[in-house]
Image (cartoon, rainbow over all chains, first blue to last red; front, side):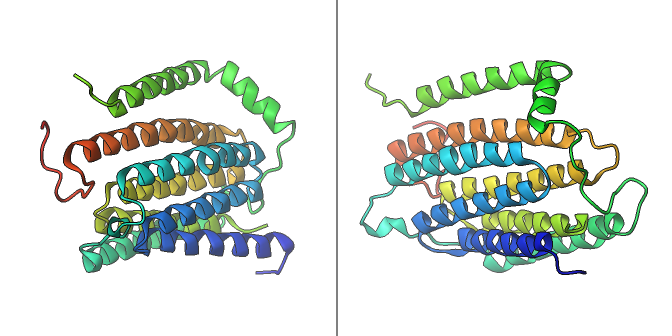
Length: 173
Length: 102
């Protein structure tokens, strides 16, 4: 493994992502978990940039860091008595969960990764650099072959928006 | 440039952590946060394969884009349900929620 700027950046970003993810699932204070979740999302956006997916990194920052984290923080504030004792949370089945998580990680690492990490015809050693403007390519794909999923996604978002309002609305009968 | 396997290791670690959180947390919002971790792990895989597969077509990025859109819808609905449950039973402990109707 040679030491290049890309490799160092990858290791730094991956370490930040995984460390914050560990804090997300172990910290007793749920507000801190939510804030560490934001760092995880930022780290994932950094990994997207290193994989030549800048558009997706921007989407990740806008949607996950900007919207979903704030949504989760709102939900936490609305459902816990802030300043009270209820802000802490307890965990259960830590041994069972840890064993399951380690088993899944070991399974993926041994089968999946070892299969793809040795040289194969399908896997390139270097990530491909887009030949034309990636934003243009994504826009063309959204209009041409993926127009039906695109329209369905907008419909689903509309339904989810209306549904969230209806579900969370206060009942005043 | 980092090899493809590094991305797969990070993604596997994120997925395992999300599974751990899903199994151990009792707070419903913390469980939703774990689901977001697992969705992000899947997205990292999609993006990494999209970059490293020969015949680069950006299809993986497209999939990840749709996954992000669905995750946004899922988070909105899930948190609305959690808020509704909190209003009814005054807690969001997933072990204690056992009523379909109040």
